[in-house]
Length: 475
Ligand code: ADP
Image 1 (cartoon, protein in one colour):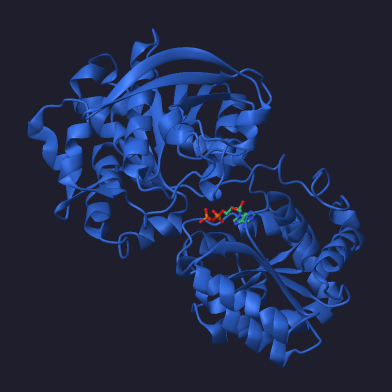
Image 2 (tube, rainbow, N blue to C red):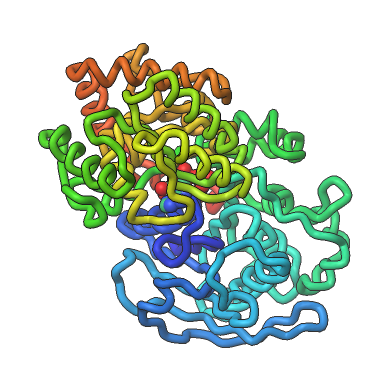
C-alpha cells in the first residue's frame, strides 16, 4: 500500500525529540515490509537540508487569509534513508534553524498541512493512508474530508499518532479564515472547549487514533490536558502501539559516535572505555558509577526534580557516584543545574544544549540513565539505554511502565512510583548497591541488551490498523 507520514520532525532532517526518531525509523521498516512509504516534513534550515541533494517535484501557492505563500516540494535524491523524504519549502515560514517556538507557529503549520495536501491532491495517484503525527498535522483528517478542494482525495484513510497529548495546537476563531473553504456544517469538528484545537480535530476526524504505548492510551483517558473526555469517546478507534527503536542507528557494535564499539561479550570493557572518554571530557571519575540524564528539562520529564535529587544523592554518596546531565529547556532549571557544578566539582557536570553525538556517548558510557518523568508517552531513552547495556532508572508511567521492570522482579531496570526527589534518591541508592554486585549487574545489563525493541516487530501493528480502516472503515 502507499503510505504517507506527515510530521513536523523526522530524523535526520529535523529532530527535537522522540517524534523525529519514530518518523525517521518506522517508514524505513514499512518500506522493508514491501510498502511504498513517503514522508513529508517542512523544509527547515538544518544541517541535513544543507548537506544533501534535493530536486523540486512540485510547485504551488497557498493562500492564508490575505497572505499568499509560494511553495516547493523537494524530494531527497538518494536512497540512503530507506524511504522517500519530501520537504515542503516555504522560505518565509520555514527557512529558520528551529523547528518550533516562533510566534507564527500556527501560520507555519497551517501552511505546511495545506501545501502537503495541495501536492498530494495533484498527484495522479491516490495514497491508501495518511499517518499524521501530533497536533502539527491534526487538521489533515478534517481538511481531507470536508475542504472542497480536496474532493479528489477525500476518501484517503487517516491515522493520527499521538506522541505527546500535552501539546495541542490551540488557535483562535480569527484563524479560521486561513483554512481552505469547507462546508460550515462541519465547523463543530474544529472546536474544543471554546477554542479551536488542532489535536482534538485530528482525534475526532481520523479513522484511527494511535498512542505510542498501551499504558499512555490508558493514561490519556484520565489526564490529557483537557482532552480526557474526547479520548474516552474515541476509545473504540484507538490503539496503543509501543514505539520501536532504529536498531541500525542505535547499535553499540557499529555506532560511529561512540569511543569504542562493543557487543554483549565485550560489554564491560567497551562501556568502561566510553565512560573514560566521557569522564575525561566532563572531569568525572571513571572508577565510580555514572548516572546520566538526557532530555528536555521540563516538569513533564521531572527536570525540576533533578537539581535537588542530584544534590541529595551526591551528598549522601559523596565520592561514590558521578552525575552527568545533558539537556535544555526551562531556564530556571538550567541555571540550578549549572550552579550545582560549584558544589560537586569532580562528581557532577552538566551540558546545556542539544548534542546528538554526546547523547550516543552518554548511552554507551553511563551505568544508569535517570528518567524521573511525570509524563512519558513512550520514552525512547530507556530503550536506547537497554540496547547499550545501561540500566534505566524510571518512574512507572506511560511507556516506561511498558518497557522497564524492576530488577527486584527479575527485570531489566530500577523503578519507582513517585516523581519525587525521595524516590529518585532511593533508586540511586539501590543502584549504587547493585553496581557493587558485578555478577548481578552484568546479568541485568545483558538482559537489557538482548531485549528486542526493533521496529520490525512493531511496524506490522501499524499495517494491521491501516488494513482494517481501508477494508472495514474501522479498527
Ligand atoms: P521526548 O518527549 O523528548 O520526545 P523521547 O524519550 O521520546 O522524549 O525522545 C527523546 C529523544 O531526544 C532521544 O533520542 C534522546 O536521545 C534525544 N534527546 C533529548 N534531549 C537531547 C539533547 N539535549 N541532546 C541530544 N539528544 C537529546
